[in-house]
Amino acid sequence: MGDIETIIITGGAGHLGKAVARCWAKPGAHVVLIDRDSQRLEKARADLASANATIIAISADASQDGSLHAGLAKLSPSLWSAPPSLIVAHALHGKDEKGSAPRIGALSPGPFREVVEANLHSAVFAIDAMLPFMRQAGGGRIVLVSSTAGLSASPTAALSYSLSKAGLAALPRLLSPELATLNVLINAVAPGKFNNPDWPDDPEQVKRYKKRVPLGRLASAEEVAALIVFLASAANGYITGQTIVQDGGRLAGAG
Image (cartoon, rainbow, N blue to C red; front, side, top):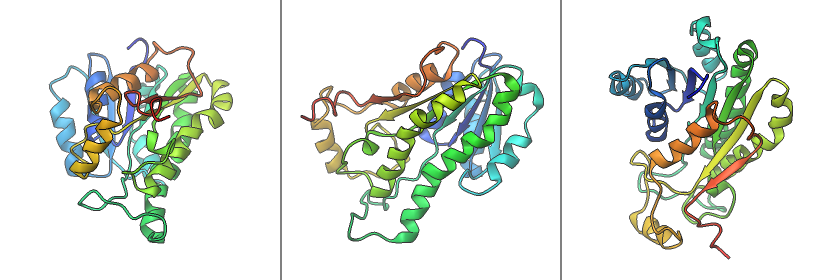
C-alpha cells in the first residue's frame, strides 16, 4: 500500500470494517481496529492474527465524548512515522430486529437522535481526534462510509440513517480545502445496499431492491472495501473532496 503503514478503522469489528482490515493486513502494516463491542472486537483481532501485520484492538465508543481520544492516546508514537489512514466505518442502522424502521410521522426523538449522533456527529469528531497525529506524520488519508440512502429517497433505510449518511456525503466537500493544507485527502464512498449479515433486512425488500439494480445483485463487502482501500492508500495521490457512488448503477438507472 505504498507508504501508508498505519490504518485506523472505526467500526473495525463490523462486517465492512473487517473486510477493509483484511485488505490491509499485510507485512509491515499496523491495523488498528476500534469498536465499542469488545467481544466482537477481540474476535476480529483473533481472525486477523494469522496475517503478518500488527493488529491492534481498541475498545472505544466513537459516539461518547473523549472515548476515541483516549483510545488513540494509547497508541505508540512510532505509528505516526508515515501518513496514516482513517476509515470511518461505524454506524447504527436505526431499524428494529425485523428490518423495519419508523417513517416520518411516527418518529421517536431519542432513537432518532442516537443514530444521527452515532453516524454523523461522531464521524466529525473522529476526524478531529486524528488530525494531530496526521499533522505529526505530515499528512494522511480519510475515507468516510456514506450511503446512497443519503443521496436519494430510500424505501428500505431508516430516515435517521439516511439523514446521517447525507451529512457524511457532504463532509469531503466541506473539509477538503482545509485538510489539503495539511496534505490530508478526504473522500467518501456511498455504497448501495451490500451483503451484510450484521444488519437486519426484510428479504422481500431486498428482492425488490435487487430488481432496481442494473447489475442485478448486491455488492459484497469486499467490493466496497476495495474502493475504500484505494482511496485510503498512497496510490490515491490526487482525489479529494469526492463522494463516490458504488451502487451497481441503481441511481443512474432510476430515471
